[in-house]
Each structure stands twice: as structure tokens, then as C-alpha cells.
Length: 285
Image (cartoon, rainbow, N blue to C red; front, side):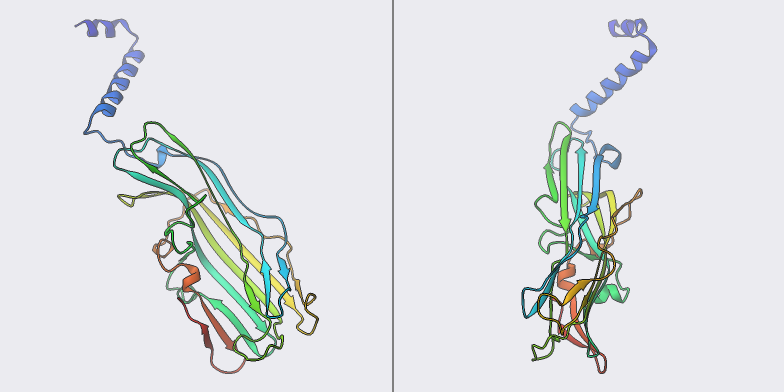
């Protein structure tokens, strides 16, 4: 009765607030009331995605292979996760998949070698995981992810970051030949990726996509095999890469982006001669 009298003495807005607080406290203290982590309860801030504003670097140090190193793609984000309930574990981090790849090494009039993702090239899948091959589905497991194990009593402030670039070797000579004569004449590479910022419940496997980034890396190198080592190759076309796009909507994650095989294990090195049948040089792992 005393409580009812006090409510009558309070403004109606304060009464409503008091009731709401009492209801919330009752939910927190009740064993049967288990709070859920939802997208609207997760705060994402300071999302950045960029490609370093520097040209691809060509290395001609070896008489066997040419190497090139592209600028880095970099992504980072701050996240505020709500309290995690007891018996739940959430992982927040970056997942990446390759959605398109053209990678051709031309050897004059003889033919070309090409790194290919057969399932992607033939349209059987929309994306291939670009995980490190160990931390599926995550791109990596150092700065790329943070794990929260409940119960936690207050919001958690997290930062996750990742980077990626190309640093391959391409043989000067035809890869299926016993000759060491330099024949490489051109390198073309065009590869596209989707990178997702995701929160995953490790127990229920529930996934919440927080941010989606699309980016692309292109390489175009002209080679004169008749020139001396150290002065054969040069960049063609653009010195800088197109910057990534942070989308204002979230794209779903295709199933092949979440598990084995990753792009490194799924790719095949083909030799495609100007005349004759193609040959598998390096099969998928």
C-alpha cells in the first residue's frame, strides 16, 4: 500500500520509468530470462578499408623467377559487444573470400601459364574461402579475431584488423620446359574479393554480418626477355590501385566462403599452349 501511494505522488513519466527499470532488473536477476545478442545491440565504429597508395614493386634478383609485391589491402574496425550470457562464446573478426580471378603469365607465341580456380571459373560457386587454411572461416587468428566467453557483465570494446597482398614468383622460362631460357613476356592479374566483418556464436553457429567490403587488385607487367636481368620488366597502366568500397548494405556469405578448401589449396596451375591441349602443371592440394 505504501508503494502505491508513492506512485500516485510521482509524475506518470517517472512511474513508467520505474516500472521499466524494475522489469529490467527482474530480467537480469531471473535465471529463466536469458538476454540475446542481436545486431541492433552491437555497435560498429571507425571502419576503414584502404589499399596503400604505392605501386607494385618488381623484383628481378633471381635468374629463375621474377617476383612482384603488390601494395597492401588493409581493413580495421572498432566494435562494442553487449554483455555475453553464460555458456556462450562469440568470435568477432574478418572473413574473406575470392570472387573472381584472372592470373595469366604469357610466354610469347609459345603459350601461357595460368593460375585458376576451376569451380569459380566455371560458375559452380560464387566465392572461395581466402582463409589462412587453419582458422576457418576466419582470415586469420591474430589481429583478425577477438573471442569473448560469457558471462561478461559489461560491454566489451574490441578492435580487429587484417591486411592482404600478393607476393608470387613467376618463372622466366616456360614452366613445363627443361630449358632455362627466359621467355616470359607479360603478366596479367585481376582478382576480386569480399571481406566481411562478422560476429559468430561458437555454440549455436549463429552469424551476424556487421560490415561488407569489396575490393580488387590488378597487376599488369610487360617483360622483355631479351634484356639483361634487372631491366626486363616494367609496370603497365595504373601505378595505384582502386580503393576498396565499404558497402552501406550487408551481403550474405556464400557457403564456400566459410570452409575448405581455401583459394590457395583450390587453385590449379595450367599450361595452355598456343597449339595443343592444355596441361595441368600443379594440381589442387
